[in-house]
Amino acid sequence: MSESLSMQRIDPEWAWSPFEPSSKIPWDDARAAHLFRRAGLGADHNVLIDARQRPPVVIVQELLAQNTEESDFRATANLLAETVMAGGDPRQLSAAWVYRFLYTPNQLLEKMTLFWHGHFATSAEKVQNARMMWNQNQFLREHALGEFSELVQRISKDPAMLIYLDSAVNRKAHPNENFARELMELFCLGEGNYSESDIQELARCFTGWEVKNKRFRKNRYQQDSGTKSILGQSGAFDGEDGIEIVLEQPQLELFLVRKWYRFFISDEPAPADELLQPLANTFREQGLRIAPVLQQLLSSNLFFSQHAMGRKIRSPVELILGSLRCLSATTNTQTLASGLLELGQGLFYPPNVKGWDGGRTWINSSTLLGRANLISKVLADDSTRFAGMSFSDYLEARQIGTPRQTIEYLSRCLLAIPLSDATQHQLLQSYERSSGGKELKLRALLHAVTSLPECQLG
Image 1 (cartoon, rainbow, N blue to C red):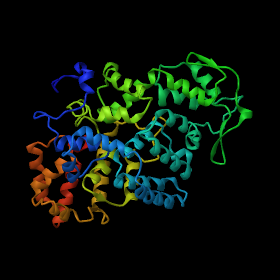
Image 2: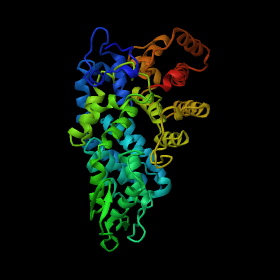
Image 3: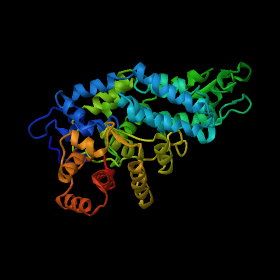
Image 4: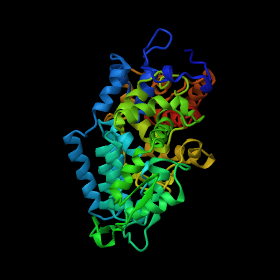
């Protein structure tokens, strides 16, 4: 099928068949960078060169196989988190997560942890307990590529979640409907696939669930043991039974794969159910396991087509941390964490129970300026290093000696769409006009590239 076909004419069978490179659509730097930007935050040029030596379907298999953090990295990252938690301020946790994004060898695992953080949104602004927030984060990471059923059952008993949705104390005489509503609307089914009666009956299932001494427990004296009628089924259901009934609904798989499509493929236009159905079928047939769906999605014809490449607006995390990661850069994680919060994507601080809207909502005149200012602040920080070196030494080590070569290198690593000749000319002129020594001029050039509209797309 030609790549020029419109969304309305995409054949689902073609869309989700494995991408096989050809002379017309090669497995090149651009497509390898696209995969690492979407399935993680990005990769430096050496990783891309290495990836091109193997078929894309194998690279995706390797990314999915990294579904558990390596023990050495996990120990270091957890030690940092424990250190900041000793202060009791959940805001400090954001820097610990930034560290993980910059250094993790398990990029897809971390990207999916971010996805679930937005899906099962819980904010430290309300929970205000660093330990609970960190425990939830660790739980999401451990199950990010596992079974959705277990993810839902366990998050339903997560103390931070229950506090956030006002369900920390759920009494038989006054069932709290918040969690039951969000379980169906935001976590599993979407609006229009349940009734108000279903919410009320499901809420009865969760009576007796509470948080005691910062831990989940069931209070059998507050459990409503009567018959409930939920989504066409009746019985003396408890909370786990109610969740299983929700998970059995056929609307669930389309609801989830639609969110993954938007997260990994493109923000808009919205895909038709017919296009998503093969992915939905895989999800249900594989027992709601997440990894098989992502394997099919990330190695598909559609994922590597013009319908996906350069068709997403990068979130602040994807832009700022992704750009640093592509250049093997390290910096002050506290500065980054604070900056992300100001840009609207504070880690551990989603804006509401729906998480981040994403897409076009990331970009306006204020956030564009804020993105440029945060990158400028990072590049002006003495602690910012590139593979442990200055930026000029980093480029020299890669045999990049001229401003034009620098622009070409940054384009390959950072940009999803090529720069026009006019834009490259403007960047060269900007470099010539900038003041200071070589290091300052090159960092100014990097700032100019990352501030381009082209760099806001991933």
